[in-house]
Every structure is written in C-alpha cells, then in structure tokens.
Image (cartoon, rainbow, N blue to C red; front, side, top):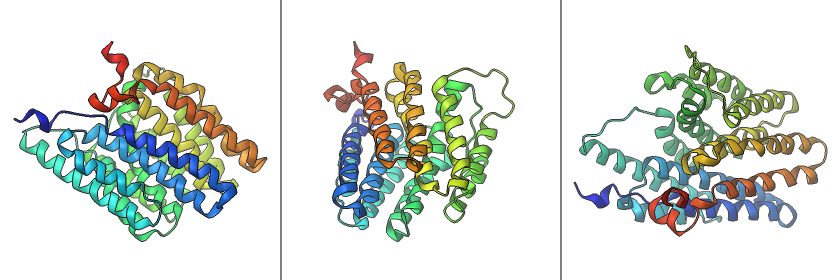
Length: 309
C-alpha cells in the first residue's frame, strides 16, 4: 500500500478561514448590500461543512488537488453554479475515497446521512430554489456526523444504515414543511438514546440538545425557522462536532458560548442590532477554542499542535 494515499492533512483549516471571511462579508453586507447577506452567510456555512466532511472522512493528501478545487469554486460568490461545481468535486472526492477504502479491504458503518449530503448539496445549489432549501443538506450532514459525538460524550447508542432512512426522509420533507425540523430532531434524539442506561454528563452536548429543540419548537410560533436552524441547530452542532474532533480538550468549554446563540435568535425579535453581536462573539470564541488546529502544523498533519507537545 502506498503510504501517501492514506497520509492525512488539515483540509478543514483553509475551509475554516474561508468560512470566517464569508461570515465577515455577510455581516458587512447587511449595511452595504443586504441582498448578498444570505449568500455570503450560506457559503460560510457550507465552508464549515465541506471542511469537516473532508477532514473526517476523506483527508488523504492523495485527494489534495480535488480538495483545493472544491475550495476554490465554493469561494466564488458570483453565481450559485460555482457552489454547484464545488459540490460536484466533493462528490468526486467521496466516490474516489470510498472506492479506495474498499480496495484496501477496510470496512466501516454506512452513514447514509453523511454520505448522501454531497449529492443533496449539488442538487440544492443547482436548483437554488431558496435559502431554506440550502439548509437541508447541512441538516442531513450534522445529524449524521454528530452521532459519533453524542455517542462519545453522552453514551448514546449509534445507528447507521437503514435505521437512518426515517431521519433522512423527515429531513428532506422539512424542505417543504419546516415545522418538521423539531419533529425530526426529537425522533433523532429518541433513536440515539434508545435502550441506553449509562448516561454520561457533558454540558456542551446536553445544551446542544436543549437549545436546538427549544428554539426550533418556538420558531413554529415565531415563524422564522431559517434563523432558528442556522443559529441554534447548525452552529451548536458544528461548534460541538468541530471542537470535539479537532480540540477535544476544549469541548466542554463550548457550553459557554451556546447560550449566546440562543440570545442571538430571540433578540432578533427585540433588537436586531443587539442580536447581531452574539453570533460573532460566539464564533470568535469558537475559533479561540480550536486555535491550536489552525496553524501550519494543523494544516500539515491534520491535528492540533497541542497533541504533538
């Protein structure tokens, strides 16, 4: 076996830089060109998604050129077709990597939620129906990838393969019926904590569950499921997963910033300017928690420099 084929690198790091730039542009565009605000913010969200999907599942340096092509096309905020092409490159990486893993003789549980998300990303960016439709691939991915996080931090029971199909179907139906988001979350958590007695205590993971359910159920009444999803489902799930995967020693500290995301959502209905403060503060603190993964060492070896000391 050629060692270079399985040698990892920190593919997620440049994507985190891109996400940070896009979130910054999204904030600026609120005053300069509000119509671009959701576009920049969505590219930022997809940057976190692309980066972590590739780091956790397809990090080999063998796919370096395709990693970079996906990054370049995702970063072009001129037309949604560039993001569609980026998704196509992501699909190529996935298919190539899965073929390689099979040729090596390795086996792994089939995470349908994770593996289907690049295909959903390509479809949604190609159609570009609305920004809510673009939330669906992110929903599918974060539910799939966080199975491992909840299993490790709360003693949940993982579920893969056909057991994931009901969650996938409910997630897809949420595109047409947004009120299904909290229902999907409830069903997802019930599957995770079925027949489990040895419940662990982890404040970050517990808060992720509470905040995601509280906000999405209230969003049915407040009629703003889009921001409820991004602020209090997507960001908490991503902050938890990325920190656990890259800087596990700081995972419990994520709990400090999750209430800020809750405030960011509810203050939208009180004072939009005040609401806009909480997200950047929480995001900057998140970057602080994973700072040891963002340097040259993190890019070269795909892990926190703290682990190498």
